[in-house]
Image (cartoon, rainbow, N blue to C red; front, side):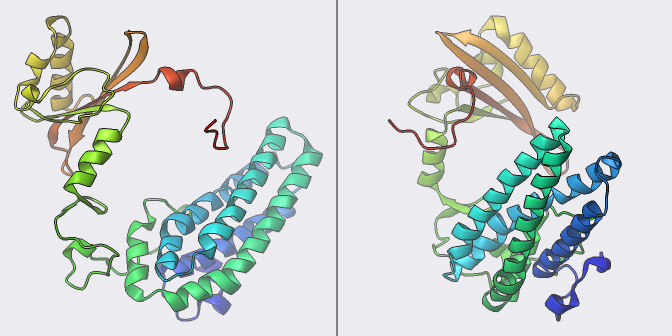
Length: 322
């Protein structure tokens, strides 16, 4: 990836540093734009497709900024990027959609016009990144911040075909005696994979989710269900600790047992049903739960009334509370 390094901006940045990776992706973006501009699109459709599809991976560059970098800038009081730059990302996203439509229509004139609009916008946002966003970020964030960002960047991904070198190992704040300061106390909170919740917050979140959830452990014992006001199927506390085969009517218990056998054997990971029930269209799913070693740890049953969802048409991008 060294061919994309811009030494002017990256002095002192070691390989894999998230800020350096942003600069490297910008260099790749410029190279892809140059490659496309050197093509005769009408005669080099396959080459154009390859370059264009890779250029569209700039979406990953933006997603890392929006979900990884911007929250840290907000922590230090700089909120402008979260509003103004994010809005510009969305503008370019719309321009890319327009270009993609002209590509599907095979309208060479429109393709040329639309991709040039994208190129101009990309050039502008890269200039803002390199002369304002990233230099300011480097001044604001400390090395622990960058390590934390790097630790989660791979969940989103990069424009490159091969992941960049990892930045120095990050210790999860919950395991680090020198953990970064959060704007809330961790006392009394349940440590989850990412984040901490108070018990009542976790219960409220599960209560207000518009789905029925039931968790059955590896021994087929019901451990949990979420208690909401609009459950699809009735549940009561009596099922906690009960063997799941006794929680289903005789006509369906054989299917439940078959699902459990297949999940435990590792031959299947999910099962799906949909039924009409009391005038509603119900979607039911079962998911095998496995730990990091692949050991079966139980099953989640999820049921949802999707009647409203099935009736949605077109798009609604603006809030409509009338």
